[in-house]
Amino acid sequence: MTEHTVEKIGGTTMSRSNELIDTLFKRSGDNANLYQRVFVVSAYGGITDLLLENKKTSAPGVYGQFAAEDSSMGWSDALNTVATAMCEAHGHLLDDPADKRAADAFVRERIEGARSFLIDLQRLCSYGHFRLDQHMMTVRELLSGLGEAHSAHATVLLLARHGINARLIDLTGWRDESQPSLVTRLDEAFADVNLAREMPIVTGYAQCREGLMGEYDRGYSEVTFALLSARTAAREAVIHKEFHLSSADPRLVCEERVVKIGHTNYDMADQLSNLGMEAIHPSAAKILRQAEIPLRIANAFDPGDPGTLIDSDTSGPSRVEMVTGLPVMALQVFEQDMVGVKGYDAAILNALTRHKVWIISKTSNANTITHYVKGTLKSMQRVEKEILAVYPSAEVQIRKVALVSAVGSNLSGLQVPRRGLNALAEAGIDPIAMQKTGRDVDVQFIVATEQMAEAVKSLHAALVEQAVNAAKQDEGHCVA
Image (cartoon, rainbow, N blue to C red):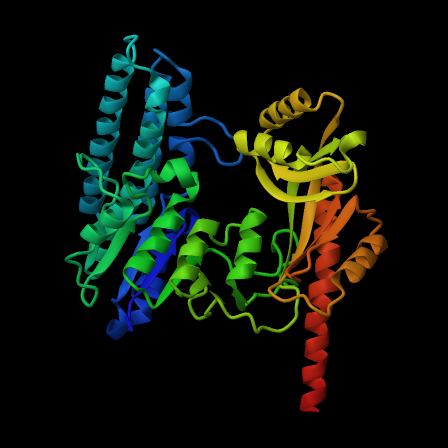
């Protein structure tokens, strides 16, 4: 059995990596266990937003501005903004002047290289034989790699200054004319790595023939992390976040009331991914599950806590592990003549798939099919237009709602639907819909968007807090 672990650090945590030198990287001075660890790093917080687009607001970054402008150089100014933000990010983390100069030089070399590429591409596409839209995914891939390469390089400088033999593993393919597969890229990068005396710092983005952005978009770093864990037969995969994987968002439910999950399985992780939770990308979870590698979600700033272990064990106790809410759109298609006729559902699914709308859940009856989805208003309008073109007599309604879900790897015997509906009723919330599958892993309550926060609090109190308090009382009786 291998000794090493592969560990991923997210962007927000990376921005505070200087706080983790002694606790995470040096393990509080435990030199005997310093190595046998591989770290896959994301770009510093906010950098990828500036390079591509803001993840929350969709405000265009360098990529968005380059895509929108045929001849203007506004994207070049955006690239200057990225360079400034990068230097500020590592400037907060690096104390030594020589390290800062080295990091500044690295940023200049990568940024100016990217600028030259984009200028040449813009000039090339000014001729009628070349179309810019045919090269935009390549542009997106190139820009994505800049953020991870920068953070990985700066981290190696930071660790080396503290006596750690860190090694930069740059998977971004910078100035590399080859087009290897992702597996080949990883295998070649680690062919001569000695994990017993080196600490690899690996870029979350990996340039490869398949094109990570095209399939996984901004979930690429977790796919790199998972496949690297599988290829190197890691003992465990670890994701370091700035919080524990808890029973609810502590910013929504009082921090004293949420509880760390502690242990769950990949089925639960799949449900969370479907609900937009950032525990792990579903494709990454699939890679780890098939390779039989357990995943640990740890709080980087709570080094003494083991965090939450995710594995394939399905024998856990019955409990609601998390209550979470997600704003969604309800796409309701009503057609009086639908009953007994096949094909309606397939046509709707084809439209949603074609316009890249994420399906969270669905329900249907004799003449109505409702999908709860995540997508832009523009994409939903296109879906509506396409459905009406096929079924002109149908009535299509699109409205914003919230899906609040009680999730657990085993909900059997807990009567979650009844208890959940009672809790919502006591809070004065009249749910739009409620649905439960036969697998006892989640129960979904559809409520008005403005009632989502209150619904999460009410369901958490009834389904999680009551169970925790009852367990504490039982423990007290046992002690007595």
